[in-house]
Figure 1 (tube, rainbow, N blue to C red):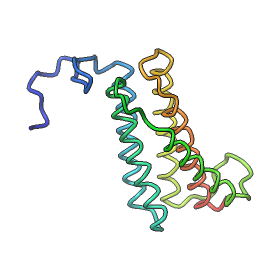
Figure 2: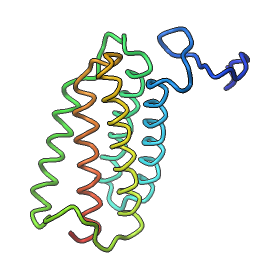
Figure 3: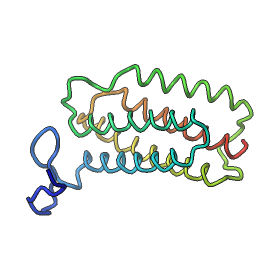
Figure 4: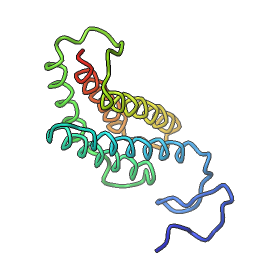
Length: 166
């Protein structure tokens, strides 16, 4: 199987659930945002210092990939999974406790990795906004996806803040 569908670039694309939709649709926009998020998570994983960070980022990549599959085919019966939300919420709670000195949302002196973490967080927030649009139009009904992406962006923020000495 090649990368090209052979159908030409007519402004439409095939989707997992069957059929073709416009490349400017909200669903394709959200998938593009999630794809960009996956790319930045891959970059941040390369920059991570500890094995714990690398493992966490790889787990987030797998979860974001699962979100993408669900957005690509919202009729999937398996859903996203409450367990993923509970786990990312636990990680967020743990990081919040470790970041007791956190005082505000300003950005301190950053190293390169903190900068990439902040870019990744911003892309996660954009992906979240795209998914909210799909949720409002009832294309995506899985509330856990919204909670997961929201918590994940907070985790990325706290990871960056820790590196910046906040």
